[in-house]
Amino acid sequence: DAKTTQPNSMESNEEEPVHLPCNHSTISGTDYIHWYRQLPSQGPEYVIHGLTSNVNNRMASLAIAEDRKSSTLILHRATLRDAAVYYCILSLNNDMRFGAGTRLTVKP
Amino acid sequence: DAGVIQSPRHEVTEMGQEVTLRCKPISGHDYLFWYRQTMMRGLELLIYFNNNVPIDDSGMPEDRFSAKMPNASFSTLKIQPSEPRDSAVYFCASSGGGWGSSTSGNTIYFGEGSWLTVV
Image 1 (cartoon, helix red, strand yellow):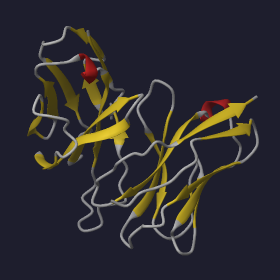
Image 2: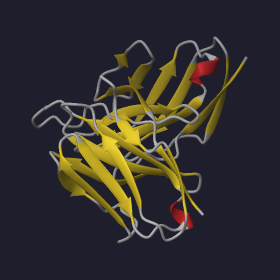
Image 3: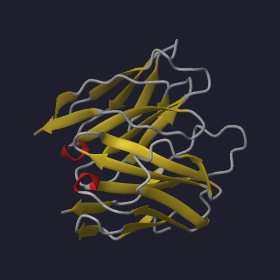
Image 4: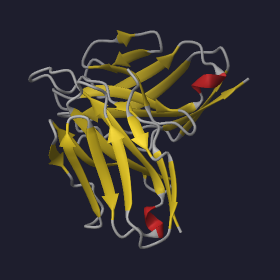
């Protein structure tokens, strides 16, 4: 199984950018990089995904290293509502397995 | 669309009783997933279906657990007999899109979960 490594926790101040790292040194050429987040007492929700190129959407940006062995989820301006567990997942044939993720705390 | 619908939202049952969790995926989605989440083990993939056929059930903890998908709009996860260690939040999720060979880029949509307590 391709695996990811994320810090257990991170802190950010409200209104500041947040960079959430993910290492995936064993990624294969066909693995997509997905990011989900889980707010308290809710199911995970999709944030963003990509294959090789950097991606932007209304929620976040995804920066993928040239060798694809790491990626970074960027929240441009953290809000209190962004406090959640963020999961970085490599998907192979829709087999989506979640690791422990990074617990993001946003301080007012 | 109403999203992935799970029932019951909360259930408290006694050890030894049968528990049935239900899921209605998003219409048109051809993948359905069952996950279990506990503090100790995090979010675990139990089983997933493609076009109503189980593809990988390696995450099902033991024979007390079974999952079925009789049609494209309904799935059940059954625990019989239930034990206190089965207490967890059970999530159903679905995805789809008919990508052909490019299947790894699709989004998974989760339900709100079924909160199970076995006493």
